[in-house]
Image (cartoon, rainbow, N blue to C red; front, top):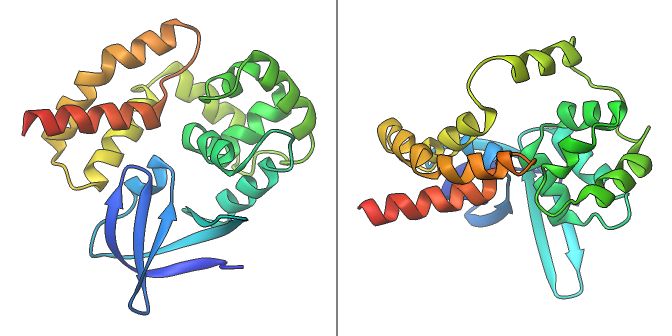
Length: 210
């Protein structure tokens, strides 16, 4: 198992980072949140999980060991493969997932692309007790405050991801504004803003503007 990769960042894409390790470029699948913390040319260390299939070897990367552990635990639930587990971490941080499972927050799981109401109910049952309690002190209070005040979390995630990909703050703001109607439509439908899809749409708007 490859526990982590460390080296300069050679390239970045919306959900992929290439880390140079000993002269070899390691392609690592990452969430937008993880991508947002990377910069091309700078040193990076990503915790990793290698998923082996008959026809592929895919390396998934995470900001820390906690994210990797949750990624692997999520796959213990029926119907959850690496892509869905990564999508869950793309929408919610580990403590937010722990909080959702421990409190039976069905809406939090439905907010993840690919999870419907019945799927969320099933996951809550299967994951109960497996992820543990939120690690951060005052996690419940912090989550409640995040909902009650401050800018929408998706705008911060999207802006950080775009800046991490090399766009200027002004360009990131314009791209966020361009996809805001799409995000608001998703929220109005009872879900939450799908950050990975919004990131792709934002990149398309930036490419058209250039």
